Image (cartoon, rainbow, N blue to C red; front, side, top):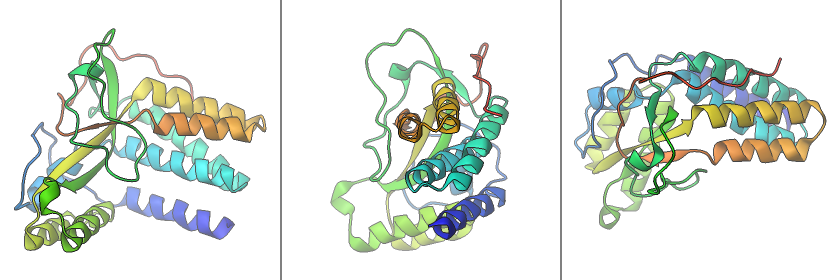
Length: 241
């Protein structure tokens, strides 16, 4: 079990150190095929690298705690807190009320989180883009081959190969939509910090619950919402030592 989690932890590290994107970030709506490497680069350039890393750490830590792998969980939580601290300076964060977000058509299968609420909120929230993937735009067009093309394209992007991902999507002729997953920076950071404190105190079940809550704060949007901060950022909790 230790080897399994260690391999996953190292895979995440290798992915996060690869040159994922070099294109400048700008707001664009979802698009349909054919998909170019430039568009793929641009879409994944919307993600916060620190947020992406922290979200991966949270998943590793939660699974490690359940598997009673103390070392992997400790390392993952420590790294998540460090990267979330750095993420407070990421210019990919943006302020917006939840009910002003543009919801995706649906939450991608196998992911925690939900679509943004349409109910008016008390004020803007600082959002951190932490995940992104392509989904088939039309349910009627889905086929096993197209679903495989989407899965392979998302996997190639995780390996830092946008050109290959775009070529695969274009060859398959799949109409796609880029779904962006964003986390409320302050709430997500607070949940991760709380999980760290609980875990250090030996309260494993409570730590797992806190990490699950962090994952479920995600909101899935179909297009960007004014990338870049506006106004004063909320203060973030201090990371665990």
